[in-house]
Image (cartoon, rainbow, N blue to C red):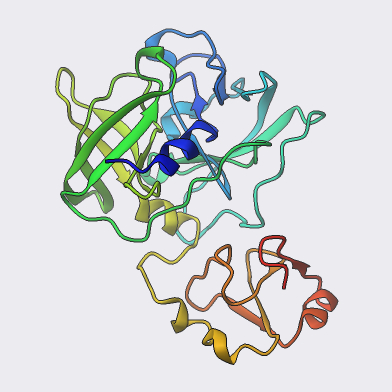
Length: 287
């Protein structure tokens, strides 16, 4: 059974509907552009931007981002990432303002990873967290636009996890159709475990890119490592604050917004010291 909170979260999640072939638009939110079932893709909001498949926006110089407010924003630039060690600058996605009409996207398709990220944070969009642990056999669910039916849920399970061409995938027993590409695959806690990229015709089976691939291209830790491996115990905290190389925000050590990757933790002895060095206090934990 899916927890109510997970469904509530999905109602406010920003989803992308995108044109896969030809020149057209793709959108985010409860408003789905009118396309044929072959032209729709799906995506979702993360703290680093909107994630979808590479093939949804690949070489679409005239693609348009349509929010649930029915506002349109063109993709101004599509950055093709060709090296695994070249990460997206993780300074946090830019808040989409009413006056903004253009957005930047990043594409890993040339690396054989069918993922793309649009550097925007849609006002009011719920941010989906990324899972650190994925198990074969666990129950999952998704929500997308199969055959242009907007926000259609599906429940299934992970059949197996495997590698092909050096990329980690998962095989799913779950309903899907054209338009599901880019849908988030979530566990029962509402965490993203994969990104659906394709399915098998006339079968309730699909393939998804493993969330580890997304975490890796974002420069995040992959394994479910203990927070204490990088942070001191809370009871010994005496005012030091922490940040990472990809963000100006600094946090208390117990802040759930502090995402750590190995060798990426920056410690400041005090809040004042962090501010002096250009840091900004996290609004979540208010250090």
